[in-house]
Length: 165
Image (cartoon, rainbow, N blue to C red; front, side):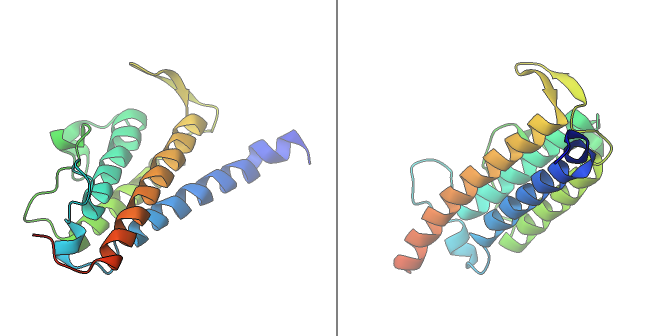
């Protein structure tokens, strides 16, 4: 296989497909849960099935809309200061709302990422110079890790169907 072929599309397709698989895996950890179970706290942190999705939507906005797209906060769909490292979900947000928010943010991320070659770079304070490839791979890692967290939470919820106190 030639290097040209890899940089002309095959590598990018594999990376983007893997990212989409991890996005869907994360959604699947919460799909079908009741509102109470989606918010069920089974660990000491704020990590719940719904908060993992909320956090992932924030990561999409921070990396793609803000960093790569250069959008102002007011131009980002759903952006708030809560995107900056928190898993907080408000009482008026349903699981369906948060899944839809994550799906919207993911669609917009795909659109923004498509404007850049994998080797294009930008300077990120605190991270250094990062490429689009690095960003896509970092999101694969982020969402795979959180899908694993979600799998464990879902296993605990499914094994103990008592509602969250």
